Length: 433
Ligand SMILES: [Zn+2]
Image 1 (cartoon, rainbow, N blue to C red):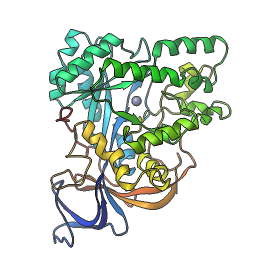
Image 2 (image 1 turned 180 degrees about the vertical axis):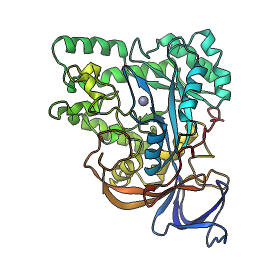
Image 3 (image 1 turned 90 degrees about the vertical axis):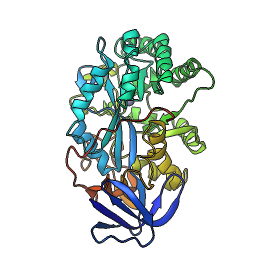
Image 4 (image 1 turned 60 degrees about the vertical axis):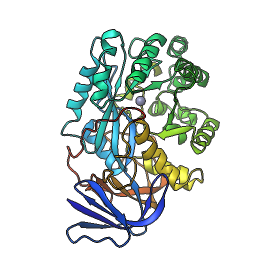
């Protein structure tokens, strides 16, 4: 299979130049001016950017949560990712109490196999880490699961205590792994939630009011202290750059669409986050795509915000939203954009240089991106399997026109043209490897 992208403006995290790109059997083999290949399919990228395929390191597809399951499975969620310019996702395989880490990994492999439209890897969510579980870590890492996630909130479901957190950090450090955290002080939040519900404060807006920023700050601080001074700490953000807590003031039950954790914050937090992004303190922009339909899933909490499934959709809209608000908004440049949505996630999570850049020898995951195409985001046109969009009605400039997954066009003229099962499992390298 030979593909030649002609006349594009190649933008990576560090470069910006005019060139043609030749791909053979899924790998970039030549980058230069005036390339030709009589056997290759030619795609013209005149007037557009050619960027590496997006890497979204935070998605929850077909993920059981309480009494319900996220509404996108590996097929619908990854297809939406593809049309939005994301060619690799790292999804969360959740351990349940009493189960091994390998069981979680195998379960998610089965969900994803032969159905996924983009390349994928897994983090495992660790809820229990006794000696037997930690003994699995070297094998897990050898399988390419080189990071895990732990929750400092949701006691009784996912929350780990500080000792478990610390033991797991040590085991992963020893084996070249990385620990990702959901940082909120779950126990104090649980008290605030119970008080609010008992006082009849059950509307969606109390979700945010019972999870104040200080309890997120405390957990982040505690986690960094536990990790000891000197260990690497990276920060990730997502919808918080675009949305703020005014959404919780929407009439009726509308605010439930934005019930996710940590909750949306006041506008001044948004500007602080953008400063962090610009300064490089925040390395990664993901989506935390965790979709629950408004009509029949979010509605579980109609009379009590604490029963609303936590999470929101975004896997399809990340590149457009960040390009619009970041680059057109004058906050970051094109190179920083690519760095945040592809290169840094690939580097931190052991996928670089195979993913996250455009270079000879890298996978031919390319997005032909039109920086000026304007469109309106809407649930009526999105591919995600969910009945609302958190960015409904927002007009954004910048969109993926064509998407190539290892040289194969899977999106043409913004239409999905690939096959379920095009995506492959990508075992990831050790942290820092
Ligand atoms: Zn998440």
